[in-house]
Length: 543
Image (cartoon, rainbow, N blue to C red; front, side, top):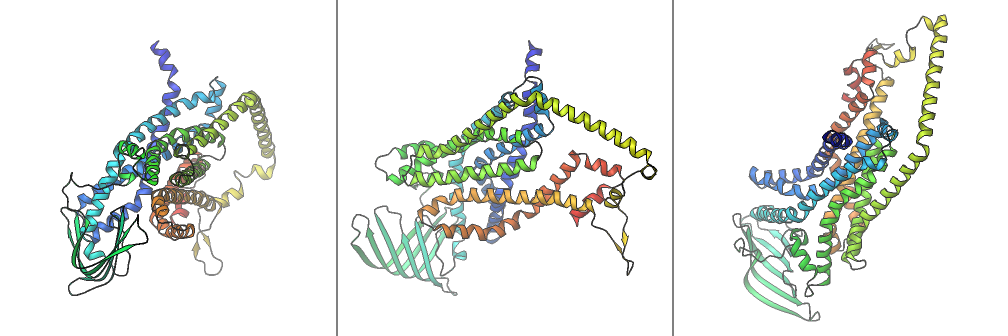
């Protein structure tokens, strides 16, 4: 019985052993590529605001759960597609079907692994993520307030203070006092306050994270929501406005955003009849999204399996392209659904889960198509392939025997074109006799391979960064009614900086990918057998 059980799970163990390292690598690479911009921002805090190294590392750790919640489903898709593409390219799936195992049997262990990823990500999204977001927000505010006096610039609208908009006309270089201060306060949901002051001074405490603004000679305008036609003006000599309350930890009554709120409180807020409809819809959307995004791992596994089966000839490059396209399409649908749900046009439940349902439907259709095609053409394709392979071998053998009988070909041991293409000897220029290395066929082939990998990595990282960042900033874009052209222009001008940040790492990945492909296809072995060293092969990449 034990031996039977052992033989029964050989395929599952083999697939899991191959998929799990790929999953870890894919999650690690995508997480690092998405967190690299955060590293530059934290490095700026470390340099310009005198943040301690322990605090900087703690900020990086607090930012990781938010990124891991997004990269775990993406890594699952990459791992499934690359594993299945490898099995398909090596004809191992054909061998399994010839042994009587259907395609769905190969899918089971991959679905089980995706289920484990879903469970881990659900715990991360519902339990760890709100607390880490809340702590990250508090530490960021504390760091900002501790050095706000030295970093605030005049004639710039400052939105870093919660529920407040600050503007100042000038700063006195002698005493650092602000002049021409304008403060718009939205902390009270029943009224809006506009404060115009002649001068002011900011005082902050890095220990408690509090910050207060001491204003002088100010006029306070109060607008009530229930009486929009009236407003009240108060002329005040001096006033202190708390930008961050000094309340002790645990007693501070601060209303956190939906991303910083616990899951149980989100459900209660979405069902509270006293809350505004927009707040209920936002809370309901966030509660559903914390389950929908982890569940995307299952949907990605279902749709990634048949796409990997179809990528027999084109290999892993096509798998990477298809994976990025699926991720971008998924997050575009999710962002559109968030806009429709929070505006009350479409039910929240439908908007949150429709991207997963679409992926599952596409995956089921592709699996059914691949299974039917395998049943119909399996034995015919095997017989045809065997006949064609045998005929090709016989034809090549006859051609070689014929050429060996011809004196011109019998005196040569190789092709002249191949010798010229793979030569390592330098050529001399006709005029000055200087040595120069020719750009031969081998160089062009290696450069094309590396360029394709580099382009795929750059497009993948830029697309992932755009959709992930858009998902994070969509709430602010919707709240402030930012035009679509402005959003598109912002991301367009952000692309050069993104490319600048990721280009070295992208070239490293492309270099490793090119070397892996050459080694896997035994091309490096063939080149070394022809007298071409590995150093000569990588010379165009180093140049």
